[in-house]
Amino acid sequence: MSLQDKQTFIKSILPVVKGMSQRTPDDKILATENDKQSHTKLRELSRLPTNKDCADCQSKVTGWASLPHGVFICINCAQIHRHIGVHISQVKAFNTGTYIWYPDEISCMELMGNLRANELYVNDKSIEKPSADADFYQREKYIRDKYEYLKSINMNMPKKIEKPVENKPKIEKDLINFW
Image (cartoon, rainbow, N blue to C red; front, side, top):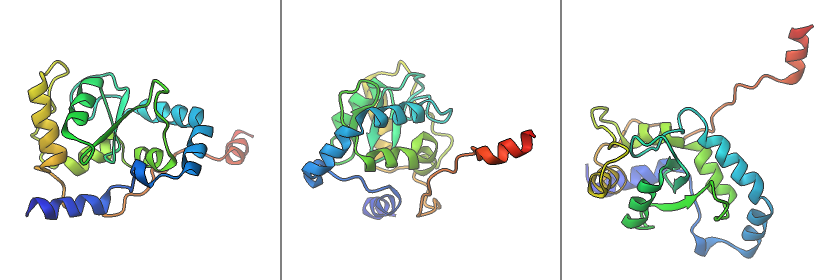
């Protein structure tokens, strides 16, 4: 399968994230008004067991995210994503409050997350993530192979990715069961 075919397949699966040139002034106003809630939501998502570790190395600390892949990453991997270019990956911090997050970006993080992204991008389970102290070149090779060259994508991934269902029972049901 050609790289172009793989790219087309990936685009059919990933959530759509608008580029900055597609944003309107109203989009920015809305995102700014919801900034605190957006960062709270992103921190909650990053604390999920499947998102706690970096998607691209064995680091236990995340503070950055890569769009449109919807992954939580460490600062060292964020530098690599930034290095390979915005045509492949846009990097934003979620723990500093520096960046404004738009609803479609948060939705992307909810829909994907590290587990789903790795199911999509790393079909060969024998491929190991670099260690947390790997050098720039080891990380760069892994990240380029994963997101740019699409060396191990899962072609059996369902084309429609649904929002995860939360297992929170309704309050009424809890009260009935309690009594």
